Image: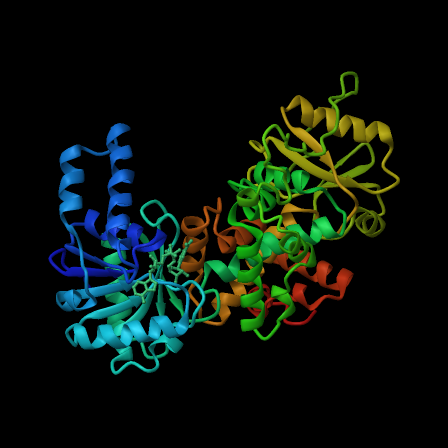
Length: 479
Ligand code: NAD
């Protein structure tokens, strides 16, 4: 299916944060764009905001003044919805309210031609539900952009039950022609990103609640070992705890309170306190003027400790001086030591163990201090900051990545998207360094399943149950 031709008029309804961004994207691709907002002056303001953003690109030499003028010339502000009659595609980005959206689409369906495509940018409302009263629900789909729309590459093309395949395919091709990375998703709560990303926040919150590490330490491990661009605590502070908590709660409720999506009381308390993050000046971290950032727990540099000649970090477990050194398989070091019959040092998952500037580890009680010092000094000599963690199942990065992968497999199993779609969504919607499925395959699916089974056994919490799809792929259909 081919993309809509650039002569197709694109209507954008709602000229707020998302609508203005979407209008800019469509105009940049060459479409004539009609921008409408119900609030008087809002569409004019939205258009002005686009102009100001583009002026900055000209200042930075990223766009020519002539191109900006052409782009802006393609965005026309409408005073009345009826002016969208010629639009071949209308993307809605109004307030997140089912009835407001339904009323709007009922009107749009009458105003536009029968073959026009109507699309919603909703983040959380069922596309099927918005479409159900329409006369032509097959011409309706979700086109879910990420904020800021001109920058973020991902567009989730969301099909409701009635959405025609050719409509979804046309939107997919059109988003691609607009320079985006489109992925197909079915209309399920949270679509792909807002569902699969839940464990990124949830595991961090649980690790904090279980007193495994502080927010600063968890953030440092997730970014410096895991290669994520932002740590979960800094990210939640940026998103705002009110917003993040309410998305978590709405996904939890939408999945009939599946424990996998259970929200955190710690986060609720932040909301209760009004500690919403950056916007209120305080969240997990303090953003008031002069307030410092707490630092991550990092071992002091050992000057005089001996070093191993051979690296204790390797694809396979290594035995040095009677101690086993291994990537965590989920079991705490004391359990692993018992099973291996040898004192054990376990380290956390790293995206790239050669380049990671930090490493997290734990050790069973019998590992002599001298050996731990040697291990730490070897890593420090390799330029790594070293964090010693409590002896806890799954450590920090491995637990987080295993849970992200588990959710990804569950979403694939439920037909929300395919593996490639989910990986692309997480890389281009929330900047993950690797898609959760490709990451799990890199670690080894059996290994990831093992971590999940340990977490499930250790906690008895159904949130850690492994996806049946992962189990099937591993050929281990019973726990
Ligand atoms: P916003 O508040 O910035 O803008 C909404 C605009 O819609 C306002 O200008 C308002 O005047 C206008 N509006 C309200 N009712 C209208 C109506 N009946 N007809 C025409 N205009 C109307 O909101 P936003 O952040 O741009 O979000 C818009 C939509 O995009 C929501 O559905 C939201 O869930 C979704 N979304 C938001 C983000 C985000 O990060 N902000 C990301 C993805 C999707």
